[in-house]
Length: 373
Image 1 (cartoon, helix red, strand yellow):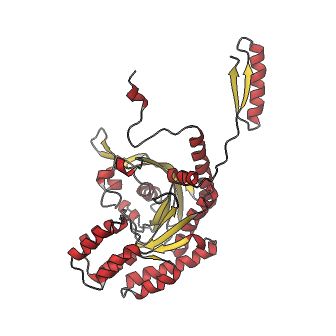
Image 2: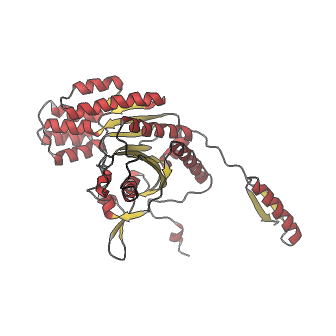
Image 3: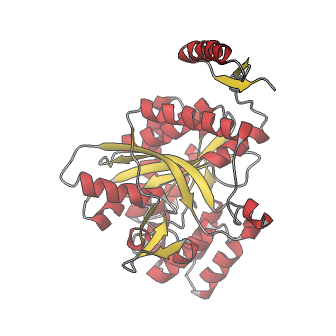
């Protein structure tokens, strides 16, 4: 036998035993909290037409997609991100509806990653999307739901960083930065590549004091008091409105009682260009990447023919599980199964064993029926 057949391709892996039980427990806990807020589960295809995730939509770069062709030679991709799929689905089935829509999902997303990054190409995500409400209350509901879900799964020590895309965009407009430079600068800042961002700002000869403001945005971690100082640092209405929105959002989150988890990061940007306003990520110690990513995407549904605001998030199940393990937070073990042994040469004994097994199973027990060896 070819031993190569026993191995999985690079970037994917098998999950079984206690690890799978723990993952299932986390999914159930997170899912129950999301469902309690009225979000209805929806299932979209594992692969879609390429245009659902094209550059115009604003999702990840084409080179990071798993692409293949159908029999009509259409380009298909394994979904790298659930949000465009949910947006397409909402536009298709709720085109004429003006009522707020709340959807949840659970499944795998696929991204081609560099093996040196230590990331898997397949990740499990559970998320929620709130469509049809552009208010700060919708922002607050979604962020509070993400926090409460993590707490329900057992995570205690984490931080939610909240930013607003328009603060950066307004600053770029005020500085006279062209669209191409803005896009490249956004990519560098979102990747925390500060040296390259500084070089680009110098290369484009952006005038002072905007040069210092744009470079400093990458390190603008703020508490609530610092937001007012950031507002004084700009004169354009777009950036000022962004700060005001964050201040209002904080007041809403206080009503949920989750303010202790909140911080602000005005340099928070994303490689997903469909984000239009509030953006947030959740970090926890022991893990160098976000375990939750989310934000507002008010223009995304218009790509599919429906004009509607929206905000949502995706919980990275595998990363949450890793964080719980690294912080030594115990996940309750499943009850051990009851074993009933029978004599395979005695049909009557087997019938009694089966009857007992069915009785226990009907009471909710896990029963394994094994022959005597």
